[in-house]
Length: 435
Image 1 (cartoon, rainbow, N blue to C red):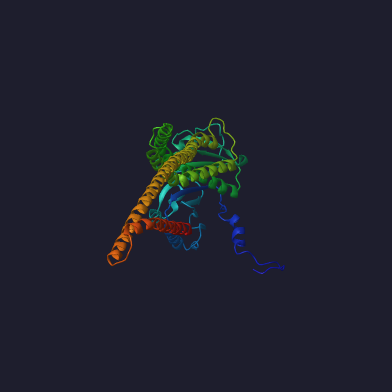
Image 2: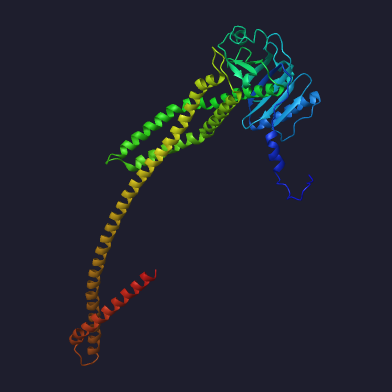
């Protein structure tokens, strides 16, 4: 891209980041219309396959397929429009058809999609919903009388409100009907073309994100007994730590096993609980975007979510927080117990060193005693040798007295042996200091 002014070159991601705000923009749809929304959980391989599958639909209708790295796509086919989005753990397909039938949900938009293509869709259905935007008629415009709206929802309790500054009224029952789809009925009071698409998108996102937020709820209920069991086990261990006669090594082993179990639960479910919190925040944001105004006699969508969804999400948050708190408590107990074990080991080492020191002193005294005896013995045998030598010389004719020579040699022998032992002690000390 050429520049008019001599400014530095662009950052490699400048245009990608700049255009990100325009990604997944709302479609411009004519009103009235029908829509069907599908949200499917996808594995890594299924995400790769769905682009191929989507390309097959585009090829059938002569539409340019999405790019190989695209994560969203919109196109108009012969009788319907499609909006596809790929998210981290799910993908969504929204089909739009212009016009309405006599009954809002008698002929949903999904009927216009080729059956064989729908049959080969991969993944697991998280959300399947039909929506219809109807013009305000004399019957539907009388909001105070809900008797004409209730039959469209199998006479279930209606939930709804006036939204987008009074431009539309939204009704639903948040139930899955016999066809396997939930339903949204939108009465167009004064919707502009862009508003209709945005309103549908928000309603479908609320439905998807609330279910995704609830994926952590069964996990929280399943982990609740494990949490109580771990809490009770920790109490038992800490109570045993207060007893002076407890086996600290055994308690430390039990704490280590308990800490491993808790960390396994935390690491296995942390992402799911964090995702539940994030999805719930998205639901709250989308509800704020609706700008609901109460219709007398029925709950608003926000009230319904607060009463039904918020307790479940709070349960998930509480379970996650309790596990983190339990992990910290186990860590503190382990640190205290290790400190106590280290002190006991240090005392044992001090006692062992004292014992070794005493033993070394005893060995030194015994060595000194042995040295004294050795000096006497060596002196005796050396003097005996000198006497034997003197007797040999006497027998050869020398005029000497062997006993006198033996007696006179004893002091010199003692002095020589003493100097020898002193030299040995000096060598040992020098060698020990050098090492």
